[in-house]
Image (cartoon, rainbow, N blue to C red; front, side, top):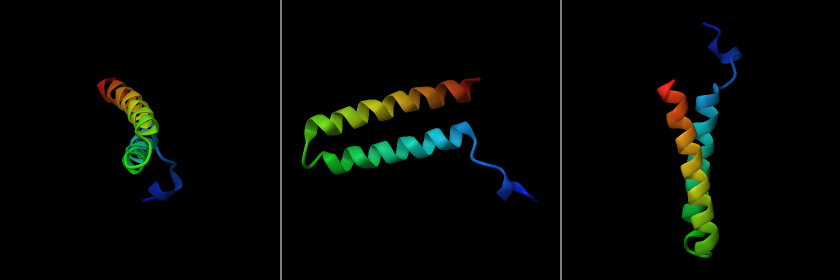
Length: 56
């Protein structure tokens, strides 16, 4: 009933960060490939953390 008082879980925060990084990577892909690749690599690290949390 009072779930709106709860903050986001760590998993939800990581998923939001992952989506944001992928979006930034896509936008950068048309202008700066090196930065796009860096954002993609950062997103992959976040995904590894998400998978680690889900496995726990």
